[in-house]
Amino acid sequence: MFALKTIHLEKKVSNENQIILLFDLDSSCPCLYPMLYTMKFLRFQSISTQHADLIALKFWYDFWFEKFATSFCESFYSTSYNFEIIQNEIDNFIIYLENNKTESNLIRLRNAAHTNYTTIGHRIRSFLKFYSFLIDEYLTIQSQPQLSLKEIQKIKENLNKYMTINKKNHKQLFKV
Image 1 (cartoon, rainbow, N blue to C red):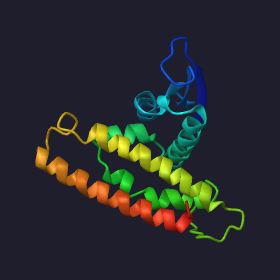
Image 2: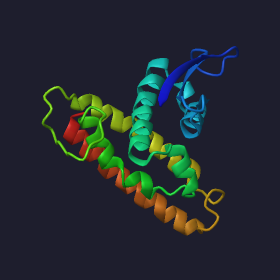
Image 3: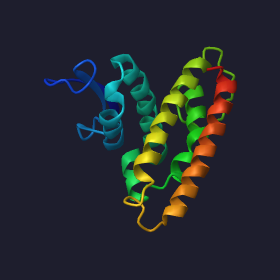
Image 4: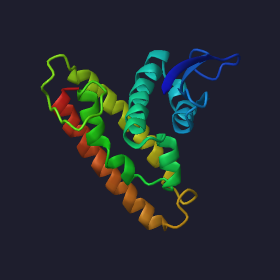
């Protein structure tokens, strides 16, 4: 469904003349929001950091597609950049990672002896960096013309509080 591909660049636009992008294998195109994230932020990171962060996003996109039978990009755009759809699924995504990336109706919490919670913690942290990027890019007057500046600031403040609490909880839970 989704795969990471390394793109070699002719001009120096990143640290190593190459970037990694997340591709939708059905359309053979890069996924929009991870591509924008890569071009605005990740391209300045090492190739290993790009890979680690994008593997977390690949798992998010796989999870989203398995659960909703549509891509995250399509869902996020069609809801007019509704951040609640993301926030409501973060805990389910963690369970998905704990269950070795298999979605099922059975919830198994911390019973898999071979689950590496440090890795899961790093993947959640990588995903939360992407979530922060989406907040900064799409919670604006231009993207949300129906909201006032005060409303946008209040929503951002609440989302940032949520993320701070979430990061603290995951740091303690997964010992990252």
